[in-house]
Length: 271
Image 1 (tube, one colour):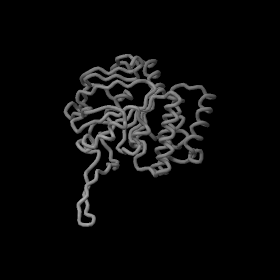
Image 2 (cartoon, one colour):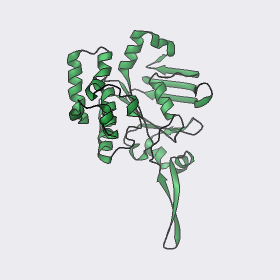
Image 3 (cartoon, rainbow, N blue to C red):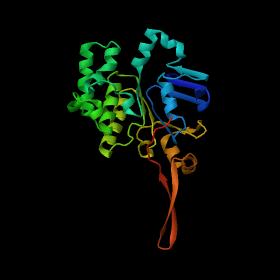
């Protein structure tokens, strides 16, 4: 454990100083790993991802990125800020929060142009990303004319264009059809095999095993209650049930009552 992407020690965060969102979070995320964060709505998953992306900072505790502790003031340094933005890309839960240009092509190119990537390199990346996500036919359209699945692909493309070392995704398969979900899972696996650190927040327990080396479980108390390999976490029905990730459903059959755990796969916005 000597090559961390992120380290959090005793991290607390509250919105407006009075709405707790993270309470005493400890994490050690190694570069090149696949990390998944699961938990019910409001458990702090999105807040954590925004912190990893340098959008918010701890009220209390230590937050390190790539071995360096840093705080909000560090982003006043243009060189530091630019280097961090090249290393870390976030795909927001709501793609509309990420897409703001008149056309899809402008949105996809915004990041690398803003970060000063050379034109030839941008053209090369664009060709690769369009092929991977199969969105070439969307380039001249307005993002607001797209379906949810198309918007999500464009948001992922915008982050991939930066070619970050760390790709952070907040509910990347929420509301998507099975085929698009499959393509995004395959994309995450391929990106990780190419050396990228993948950090995903999800409600969909069906995809967790494929996209995780380590899983962190958040509770409604905004804390990590358990972490471990995906098979260990997913087999712990009591843990999942206690943290509102599965529910018990009973039904009658041939005069008997049967009780089964069911996965929670609903997707709602959260903090």
